[in-house]
Image (cartoon, rainbow, N blue to C red; front, side):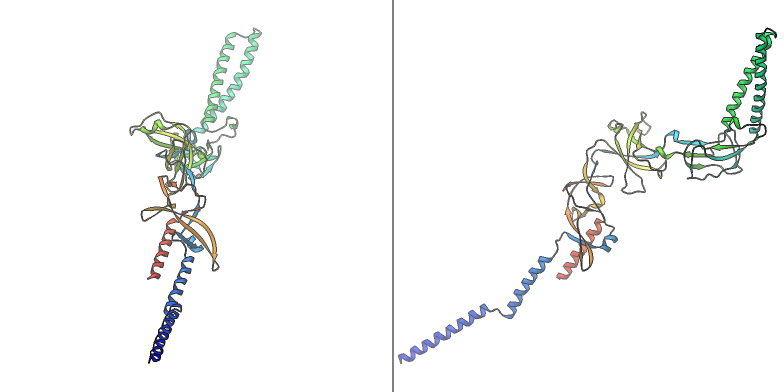
Length: 410
């Protein structure tokens, strides 16, 4: 009976031991579902390792062109101590001339058009007037009489020296001779005034038409006459301006005048040119305050440009000191979720045979903004190139990429 009980106990122990062993085996060897879950976790970990940073964005060559992206660097600009003013491009009085016909007359010919370039001494018109004939006749007759009186004067001097002729004759001839000299000199000046050289006036070359010449080099800005029209001496036939010495005439408010000094730099832009600045130097500060409590100041262009035209409106900034700050064009900075960012260029690479350009979005702290430029306070020592144009295209590309990623996640 005891042996039967022992055999039964040993059988139960062996059965329990086998069950425990099977359970451990099952724990060591995961089921199919458990195995797949672990492999899936491992694969997901590998994909995350290859994912790009949330602040990175890449552009294909086509996207780079379509987005109008341009690269540039942080530059030094004087943005903190300036006076914003308005003004015009102008020329000194000696560089702007009005051309008229001294005695008037009918315009026989002219080829001038607005915008044409002319040189000093160039023929600009021919004017016809019968009065020209009278002046030439008077000059030739007076010149002939002067030659006769000169001979008579010398003869009377000789007779008076030999005490043959009376002194009264010498005195009379002397007076006539000097009077005729004055008349001839006066007629010479009249001929020069109407543009005719006295040496060209001869008895067989009297003319009723006279040339009108350009007194300076420059461009024709006004043409107020045409062939056949009659002009008076006060009529302005043409206006010619020499643009080689343009200056900027600015209007400064009275309260800012004490801040100005000759030699300060002036940055100015034209209304039809965004972002392009030209430089000038303050040359003259006016001494009269207008009814609007403003003063005119003049600045000379640092670099002459022929395409600029007097009368163009300008917006200018007068730099009060030489303190400069790191700055970027205003359009290089974008806003996202209340913060300011720029896109730093990280280089280019080839992916699947296509050239890709990589950018990294970087948060910045900006300062003052003037004349299309914004001060970069932090970080100010970026050496890499930056997307100075097309930054919002990069931001849009990044937002679209994020939305696509969220869509795939759902």
